[in-house]
Image (cartoon, rainbow, N blue to C red; front, side, top):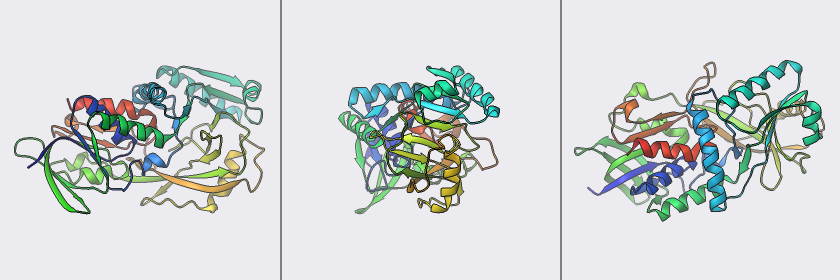
Length: 368
């Protein structure tokens, strides 16, 4: 059989970051993507926020990789001309009982190594954003926004300059441990089936990562997380928002609350909310509008009726149930499942975009 050094399954921002890190480490890399475009899944349906790293438990993979990834991401964007802006974010307490939540977030951020965090009284916050309603706010100066498609294009370009290749409309069918180590991989595309030996294999398949890993012969069933899905709906603002920074409420269970984000052209959108669903679904129902208006008006009471319109939805790859505590990133390398040369990435939801470059380095390190 033909032999390929490394196969990456999935061409979202995480898969492309892994391919980039592996190619720069001298690996021969082929990225396979079932869709007709790269980055058309989770990576194209999010808030495009560069997170600072203050939300996640100290010592967690999310905290460590978000902070490291953010620093790498800003440097990468500057070096490769990826449109981005370090605009900052205000997390707002709209009642006195939430002040303690902001103090806890600030302490957590400091423990995670996040710089540029300041608590502001309402007057100070309103000097920055006059239309904001709050009793206190936490300013995160290192938060920003990025053009996620331009980022993925730049990552793919750098990986290709180091010898990586991309195969679109190519489905990963199965793999088995080969007789001479590595994996006997089977793919299919419009031309039929293909079989070859891959010495290393990375599963970065987003929403379908657990079901893809289940098609690897010998992967321990007990190590497969259950696939769950939480939809996030977004509504766009008609007209220009009177804000120059992102505005977030105090976090809620399973999400960060209905927040205001901006794109690089200054257009505002609100979301995502959290809607647990049985299968991926990208429709946005206007039935959710009353909840959005109610949530947004707690921090922007100038929002008028009729200013919101359905925009798009994304789906988070959850690996925990609604009643369970939030799970950390699950980067399952050989030590986790016993198969040499294999890394599977499960539950890579937010802050996956921010952490992508750091995750790629971790994966490359596990496959040395």
